[in-house]
Amino acid sequence: MYTLNISGHHVQSGEEVQELVKEKMDHLSRINNTITTINVVLNTEKHEIHELIVEASVHIPGHDLFATVNTDKQLKPALDLLVGKLEKQLIKHKAKHSGRQHHLNAKDVESPVERQMQAEFDELVEREVI
Image 1 (cartoon, rainbow, N blue to C red):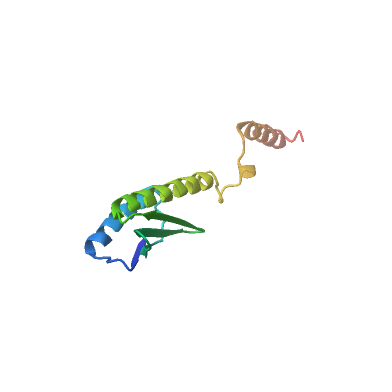
Image 2 (tube, rainbow, N blue to C red; image 1 turned 45 degrees about the horizontal axis):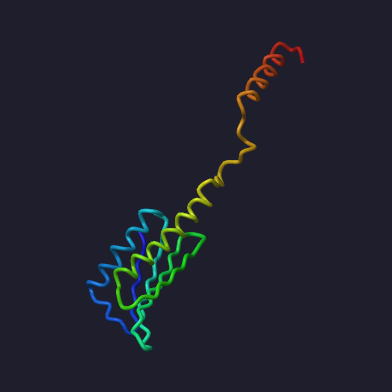
């Protein structure tokens, strides 16, 4: 389970907006269940056109992921793009780190040939040949 923090700057972050953000971010937890915190910031820039900026940071143990999307006031497409970017980063991170096994050293694993040689040696020792 993760903690979701949603903040809005110059944006009304009502209950329906929060539910939409939560629904979209829940998709990320299906990809990587070690997510501890997700921070989402909704912001608007008032220039010639009103631009919506959606930023998110995802914290997983040992790594932080960031993504930003700029759109023209459409929240759902912005969240879809944001989740897509974060998905790619999570999949890439998972692919890099899934092959690593920190608790098992490859040198400690005995091959069948080594096991056979050890058995033959033990047998010779028992017969006191060596």
